[in-house]
Length: 411
Ligand SMILES: *Cc1c(COP(=O)(O)O)cnc(C)c1O
Image (cartoon, rainbow, N blue to C red; front, side):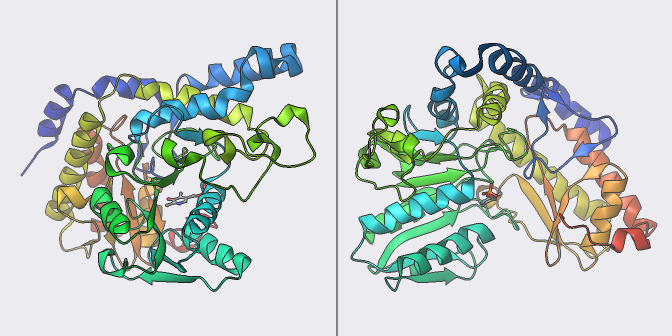
């Protein structure tokens, strides 16, 4: 069995070890929830202060030109692009993931107007399903949402399908879809492919361009560490950009917003996916947060992520076996995202007890305890120490206190 010293030895040879110092991490906390809200990168406060206290306060409205505020949706998008296999001018930052899903699903259905089916998974993140339902109702053209139970979606993709809309890494189980194979199947059937990268971008290499994906969206407050409610991003490859019509035809997606023309005329390129005025403070924070990825090899990030999750699975099974945890995450590395989920009938109070002792993960209804392993700032000894806390919470039944059973609004 491994020891804490074995973990410390891995930290000493970890090529990413120095990146941890680029984050503000509170003392006494092992943060295993960076898949829900990434921690604060050290460069962010100074950038936000600069934007607020110099650009906004002193330069006022002139900042739109002199500080290139209006280019932020594109310039920050170009920084996300290499993390997801996109080229320059193929990623736009703005709106929320939910709104971007709506924009791209609507544009995709219009491009395949002779077809009526959207394929997704019943276990997809709820907003992805809810927005498809709302769009179908809005269109009133008899579209059908075909929801697959389980992870194997290939058989559901046939010649009736207009759009396949999937999340690459399942938020509950951490199952990783084969992005290239599913995209190929969608294209072979004549359908368009939309990926939600919220739980993958920043934790593993993603190759949208290599797979030929048609659309993607994602959150930037999870593994990209852009801060609470950070603006999301969307991806459209160049060859499709001018074929799409954007349903939210706001003035910032207009070909000439400052001509104030009476009628809408879409801009060329990814810019037509814009809608209204960008959130400058949030985009600036995200821009600074992305500095931590400068010069990083995503293959090394993925390798460390798999090592962390692999050790966590082994150590929980060795040290907490017999306490009723059932692994909900694939053991097979290729199918495992950057999180480990355990099913447990007392998952909620156990997680509350772990959080009270500084091991912060989260809980997803009905019974999933979810631990995220962001490879940029976690150490191998953190894995060991987190398991030590879980082991003692279980051995001494410290989870079974009344206060840990009370449900908070956000779990
Ligand atoms: C976190 C997450 C979202 C969140 O969408 P918001 O519009 O930012 O609230 C959407 N999809 C997936 C798959 C997610 O994991």
